[in-house]
Amino acid sequence: MATKKSNSSTKSTKTKPTKGATAAKPVKKSEIEAPKTKTVEKTKAKKSCFAGFFAKKYEENESILTIFKNRKFYGALLGEVIGTMLLALLLITLSLMGIASIATYAFAVIAILVAVYAFSGACLNPIVTVGMMASRRMSVVRGIMYIVAEVIGAWLGWLIFNGFHLAGGDLASYDVPTMATVAEGSFWMVTMVELLGAAIIGFFFARAIEYKRSAFTFAAVVAGGMALAVVIGYVVSIAFLGLSSNFIFNPAVALMMQIFPQAGENFGEVLGGICQALSIYALIPMIGGVIGFYLSDFAKKLLED
Image (tube, rainbow, N blue to C red; front, side, top):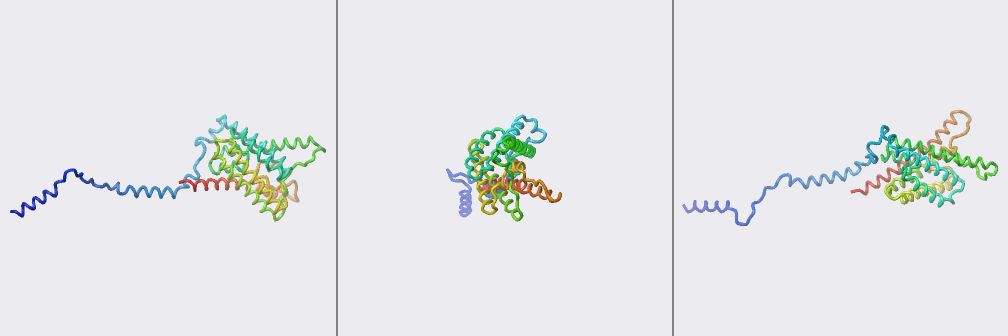
């Protein structure tokens, strides 16, 4: 009997909770797996840091059906025409003076960009416009219309310069500037100069957009990139090609500077010259601009957590 009592008393002492002690709560399965889930989510987030690389960076509703109903769009086109006209006048006139005028060039570009920035964002160059479209900072319809406006602006700048030249007659001390003819064997060298300069301009423009709250800072960064591209292009051209006017880094202005052959032995030769000129001074620079924008976006993504 004593043994049975002791067993019963032992059982009772085991089951009775002590005073002041709290009963242990059962651990839920979700609480155990929660830290693992968070770790997995962080790992996935790090692996997918480039998920939004090609995401739209412009208004979602901007399309061919809506953009022409916006009055501000026409103001932007006018700004591109005026800005590119002034830039074309600057590039054409300074092409007669050489690298000695690079400081004047930089300050003039800053003034043009600041004046036009509020209207259209001051692309003023098909290199930049194509880069904006490729990086999805601008809709395709806006980009195409910007390029048309830039070509019109460059044409107006050329007309103004040529008008003064014709009015001067025999008194004009300078000839109308033209692009230097690409000699045989120098095609790839000239192409690389255009590609490198366009990539520099595209990269600097993409970085300058980060300072869009300050028009002057934006203009200074872009002008600095353009001046750097001109200096590099000039030095490379003089050192390796013996030419000083075989680059322009602006397809809209290049089209006005007689890049196309005027004559040839046959139609095939003329057509080949036209295709060569378009590839060097239009297609390759636009590709370089896209590369510059992508390099900027790639570097920016690497810095993000």
